[in-house]
Length: 332
Ligand code: 13P
Ligand code: SF4
Image (cartoon, rainbow, N blue to C red; front, side, top):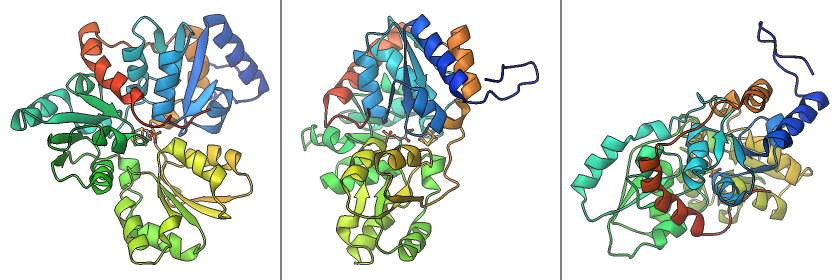
């Protein structure tokens, strides 16, 4: 393993690095959680890799005294909200999220004032301040179930992702669901024309589409128009993609989400040719969690994630409702 030096030589994620990470994790009584978009070496060294919902559930149930969240800041914050007495670390606190930045607490309060009787459903990709203003959080794997759990006559405010919101509206057929116009810059950039072109070039492929994608509506249009057989178009959370990879009989799959996902898919079904719809769809925040950053985190106990007690208390019920609803998220 190359030592971290003053000149910021990158640590090689070799066996010595891996052994040191595992030794330090044991010494700190830490559980290492990695999102499906993390670099392959981070996914491999973690105790659990999965989607947002699965990792939230694991964080809530873990007996470890320290949770190291290899993901982005809102994920680590969610773990802290659920386990206020635990130490929650993220290897680089600058790992933000453009989607979480698309609504803040004041904006949500103003929106609620316009719809005082509405139930607020917020995607887990939000800050603790927004969660504190929320009735039920959701992730991509249980958003439809969460909205279905709300009495049909109640208005719903859904934030912040417009593409996931459109998916939920389509699935539930709910007219009284208002959607905030936020988006993730990575997923919004995976667009319909690109998907149509790729689908035409690999005609037998299944399409695995994350509902945050700009192309989700186009995928359903391709299915509706008969361009792609409807059963080949699957709108899935990242964890559900891994399950679908194990179940499909297709020999090729086009994947519309952040490219880190390909690692778990190829592990789950090595015989399938998985191709990214957009190979440039890389989240720079997720990739801030490097081999160096994780080593520093475990050695120095940084960066610690804190959520002020009053905000965490207000956010906790919304997050607990999220982890109680729907199928288990996908994760090992
Ligand atoms: P899921 O893992 O819940 O599908 O979320 C994807 C995502 O974009 C997280 O930032
Ligand atoms: Fe946020 Fe998009 Fe990155 Fe996911 S991929 S963490 S939604 S910026």
